[in-house]
Length: 367
Image 1 (tube, rainbow, N blue to C red):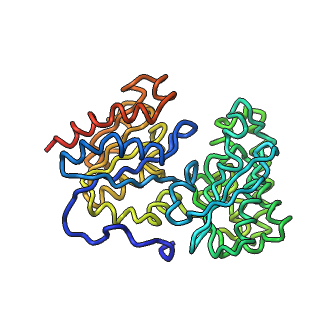
Image 2: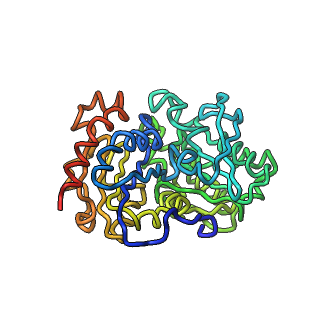
Image 3: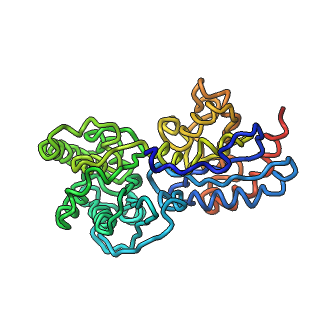
């Protein structure tokens, strides 16, 4: 994807570290990355100025919610379509285009909130068809490259609905060489049911049925692709949607590094004194290819400290940070601990704006 990466802002390294990079992922179902970054930038502007610093806003995504907004500098024009929602209902969803690429965010068409969350979802009936319809529109418009973010879906249909939609549009043969899939996890195809089904409302009986369906699809996809796709890293992303697109020839790539490169993140860190990030819930998987983990990897390489303000923490901060990153990750905070769980969920951006100046003042004052 190097051919798509734009030049990083202020890429020349003059040895001046006068920026604080604000690089949040979305708090799923609560606040978008752009909203969180805007709240962080506004609430800390005066504080940063006092330290001779300024904010460098950079909302990020790993391929899930907020994918279109994070990559708006690369594809600023949105096109709205009525497509099939996760339970077959009509949904108005966008795809985005720019000079060199187009973007499709699966969560916009078949996201779990559109199905009413786990409680309202039909795990066996939920479909990825709407993603295929958006992708078909982008391909038909002549986009030379289409990036599909597959995280956040309600479906565990192995991409069957999306593949059928592309077949119906006569565009399945256009996927190879033109479509890249941004995966938010590295889970293989057959594991998608057991790993993600419970999050989408599936009980034990439904999980067994979903797993059996993925097994059957894997065999059919191998025949269609002329090679097995079920062990490709990330093929289980989006409930197996990534694997279905891989069977048509799409290239699977880790989402967070892809988005970071396209936004010139490595170059931006050359001027950074500090990186501030966060996601809805920080746990052990956050360091394995997600936004926070990618930022930690880049920050460690540049010797830039990283602070994380999450919605909540899955355990004590000192236990969540891997030993190899403890020199880079200087602080991990949880909004739920600082303002209470109810306030953190009801108003994450307001809560962030309330606590962040004090947290950063303390952190920046340290030697």
